Image (cartoon, rainbow, N blue to C red):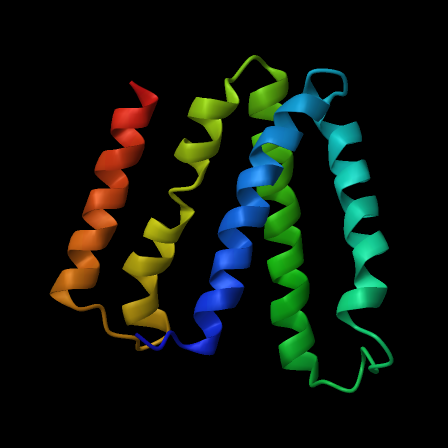
Length: 138
């Protein structure tokens, strides 16, 4: 079976964010959410030269940069809220899967805003993910 190139990057996301869920809880056992978020950003900045070597950051359109900055703002807000939930006593085994429901919003909104289609099978996959998180959370 031939897997598309994007699949391997998605696998990196799953592995990386799985590790992140554990590291976030470990950090919020010792740091408040706002401090943990600052150190999360430091981690991003340390990785940035490897991800973006020698490319001009500002040669993109203002519209593209605006979408990217808004994405960063909402990413930071979500990361802070996740860290705050863990800092306030949330278990990583509950908080992380629960917050992993964010793709449901994308799956519901993408057909309307991005004109993407969702097949019945994909819709069933989303439903299974929702059921899995509910089962993990109880």
